[in-house]
Length: 133
Image 1 (cartoon, helix red, strand yellow):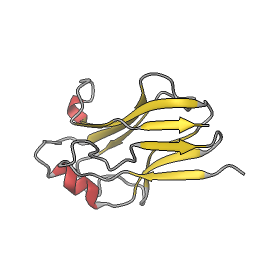
Image 2 (tube, one colour):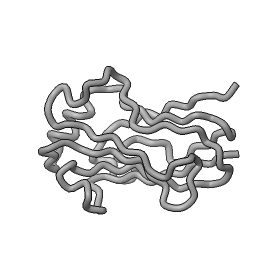
Image 3 (cartoon, rainbow, N blue to C red):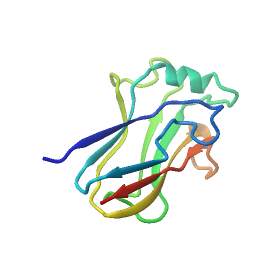
Image 4 (spheres, rainbow, N blue to C red):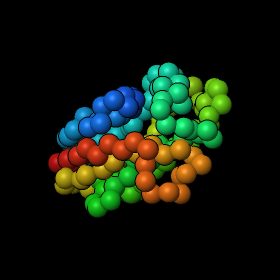
């Protein structure tokens, strides 16, 4: 039976190398389901009250610029700027997929203010690696 790996999305704007606390490299067996989740509700307060302005909400995006381990290359979650921020109970699923394509894949998690979501420049970005064997 295939396993599920949950990767918790955190937020620390002072950590420029990994503002979301993601592992720098993940290695999983082909067929493993990977879920990027938000477990702690305070993450939204931390983001909304950070030095950057998120007046209308925020958009989290998991993306693969080159090869992807999944059937998709990009998955997004839009979050309102008004409490309770998101109607779903915690944990909140940012993205999920079954790792089918073997190889080394560089992926990213970026956060953009919703009113600037069409702008390609993220407010925060994290770029780790995913290896599927």
